[in-house]
Structure formats: C-alpha cells, structure tokens
Length: 345
Image 1 (cartoon, rainbow, N blue to C red):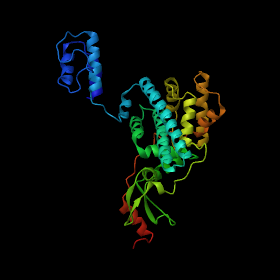
Image 2: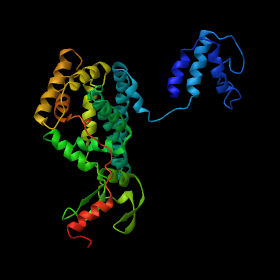
Image 3: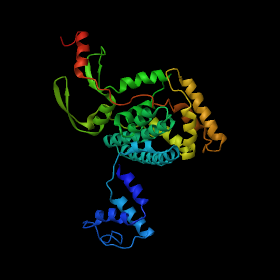
Image 4: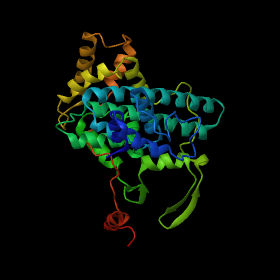
C-alpha cells in the first residue's frame, strides 16, 4: 500500500483511532513546535475540524515519492485528463521559459550554456507529446502500451526520440517504426563502409556530450571529452525555435491541453487503428477531422491559420505502439559483424 493511499484513507477516518495513528508521527519530532497544529502529543477530544487538520499534517510529513507518473494509470479517464492538463500546461510554460533563457545566453555569445538550456527545453516540450500520446492510447485495449507510455515521461532516450521525431517528415507509420528501431539501439555501426566504427546511441551521446565532462574509451583509445568543444557547438540563428516547442506551443494556444479537449481527443484517437498501413496523408486527414470536431463544439480556442496548420501538419503519428526504451546491443555482436566485413581479422 502506498503512502498516498494511506493518506487518502486517513482523511476518511472519523474516530479516535485516527489520533492513535497520527500522534506518533509528531511526538518527540525535532520539527515539532510552532509549525505543528494544536493537538499533537496530547489526548484532546477529536473533532471533525481537528481531525482534518491532523490528516493534512500527516499527509505533509509522509514520505514523498518523485517520478510517480505511473500512478496516473490508477485514475479514471476524467481524473486522468484533469491531471494531464495541469502537467502538460506546466511543461509548456517551463519549456518556453528555459527556451527564452537559452536565447539570452545565445545573445551573450555563451553557446555552451545556451545549448544545454535548449536541450532541456526540448526534453520538457517532448514530455507534453508523451502525455498526449498517453491520452490517444486506448488504455483498456492496450493497457501494457499505456503503462509503458507513461514511463517514457522520465526516460531521457524516449524524450530525445520525441524531440528528434518532430524534425522528421515520415511518409508512413511503417517508416517511423524503422527509424525508432535504429535510434533506440545502445550501440551501432557507422563509417565510410557503414561498419567501420562502433558508436554509442547518438541521442544519448549528444545529450551527455552537451552537458558533461567525461572520460571516453573508443576502440581502445582513451581521452577526455570537453562539452565546450563539441562539433555541434555554435550560435543559434535569431528567432530559431525547435519544432518540438513550436508544436506544443501551438497545441497549447489551440486549447488542446484543456481537460474537456483531452476528453474529445481521447475519444477520437482511441477509435483509430495505428499500424503500418497508416500514411502521412491519412494522418493529415485525421488531424484535420479532429480539429474540425473541436471547432464544432466551440473548444478550438484559435482561428490563427498558422497555429492550426502547425497542428494539422506537424502533429505526427502516435508513438504509443512502439518500444522507445534502450535496445541493449552488445559490442561483441557488432565486432562479429565487422569481422564478417573483413575488419579486425
């Protein structure tokens, strides 16, 4: 039983046993004093108001769990949409603020810090798309996919895949699956002959090289990596914004992150079949039909053609059917492939 469930049940208590449970939490506590409500450490008559106060304090002092996104799977649809609406709005606001700070550093000709913040802004924006794909997932029929989709919220590789995904223009869901299968491999081969060298996952490598100093081994050679000297380090063009942030900003402006709209999005998208036969042209029609249904009930909060076109053209196939977790590939397996090509005899 989780602490949160304990707290909910505690708030439903209405008898002396409630005090018996709460008092040990505060008795002889070093933090007890002016911050503790009256009633701790003494046996006062339990009134409804006092019990409510004690339950609130017990909730405050209970151990907190971070990264509890998986708990959303326990909610009803209405509660789920309300929670996701709050979280998605926070992610958009945070991403926009970080992105703005990134431009400030860029103007000051501090590209290293600017790139770090831009990366953080893209990941934060990607979390909005991850939550929306959880809404679009038919959670009853595909419960395992729904639970896995929620896990992507705290997965750096999954967030990186979503951020890179927005730069692409796939012609079909089949093409998306092939691309994702390549991008999630832990190690891969590349070079002039496509098998010359072994590389670490590009999305994770770029993320870590942008932020951290590291001691690196590459085919037996060792060196220190300096994040200030990467090939990707350069000043951003003025008014440059990642397509990920551009898309989630458009979705926010259109009102697509509100609970009522999320309910309609879920009903519309859960009825769709997402498989290899779905083309980008069919996806474009689905996006337009979805926007028209929102407009018909007065929930589309913009008539800006630029915003509408961004959503219609750039909100791509849902990724909930795909595994975005790291695909463990051993270096020995890749070296065997190299030997088959005549390398490292």
